[in-house]
Image 1 (spheres, rainbow, N blue to C red):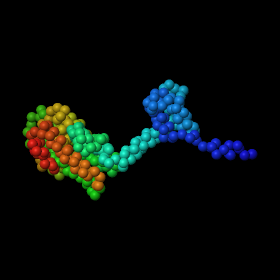
Image 2 (image 1 turned 45 degrees about the vertical axis):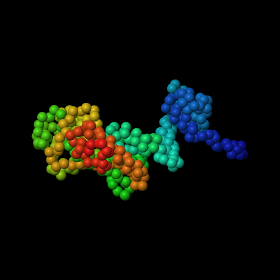
Image 3 (image 1 turned 180 degrees about the vertical axis):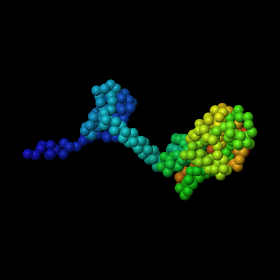
Image 4 (image 1 turned 135 degrees about the horizontal axis):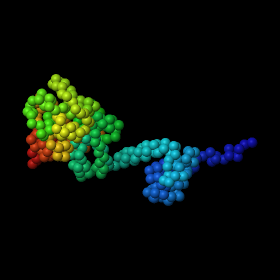
Length: 336
């Protein structure tokens, strides 16, 4: 005999409901662990939120929330849904941002990667410049290393990077140089030896350096190898603040540039900055964007970064500030 349900086209269908809204409500409940609180945050009644959750569980045929506990907890299936839910909501936010960019007459959001060593120095000035001069209402900043910026540019997670020259420069990059800076010998302020005697320095202090996984660490290692110099090493780090902290212990020395020193000097770390007692080397800081994207903005940002760094270097490093070579002329009335 034919099952009566077979003749009902609606019998095997899931409830008619908004799946995305239901997932959004579930994620709020999972975060707040209370249906009532989550419903209030979402501007809906508790009964409406509960109905969405019920429809969601009916659609999938499993329980996502264990209501026997207070506060509520997630079942094993609920944990799986929560992991997917994070990705779903993130994708929706990315979609909204991309659509806003397509519909906007001006750039609504600018995503920038900054070298960690100068991120604090640049952020206030770049925020004001982006809003007031470029007309960008929202600025999203992230700090990292040059290798982080390369990956983020390739993945289109950022639009522009203020980074080092070790980001690969090929046909996919639009590069605007900001400045070239020399490396210096950085000693503890209390060091009383001759700063020109590298053998004496290395016999009394250990080298604290960037790790070989970082662009500046590789650059330093390569130069020391060219100079046939081999120093005892005490510590490796991937952030300039940690490298300088090693010098501040009084037991180490480092090889750093002004941009790698700016945060430490601003924080009041006591250091002795001297010229290198062996052949020098340099690095470049530049603005990089994907070729064809935001080139005018990249040019304007590079000029603004040069102005910000020029002012900060003059304040923090008056003895060596003039040795930094900028790719933009100083504004009128500015020294350097």
